[in-house]
Image: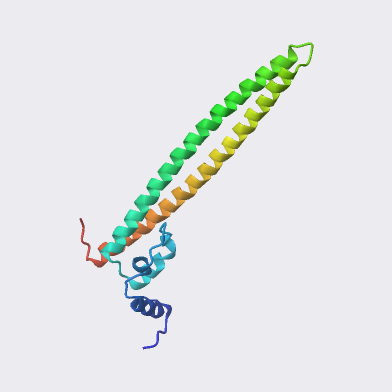
Length: 165
């Protein structure tokens, strides 16, 4: 039989692979399931293992997102502390320079230390922003994975005739 429609071609390809969907045979590492969901929808069939794996992937991504968010928060707190310290050093150096009639090497050292502290605070802030962006991306992937898992579960329960746990 020669496949005539895209549905026929998809079903023939899946039959050759020996599975009901590509998710069962080739699970993506972080369940970018929306790109696989159409293949599941084409076959109209989800194995219980596929639905369970989709839920587990969604849970794993949610845990990774939470860990990333906690790390971003920790980095943001460290950046805030470093910024406060840099501001204190800068104020102290400014007072030293402003309250003195003569310029000394100690004033130069305190100004350099204040500048270094400010640069360090900026670097920590950049790390915190980068970590927050990574956490946002993981949150997005977790939400997509959860949506895909819910769709797979709904399809599975529909094909089982409305069975419920």
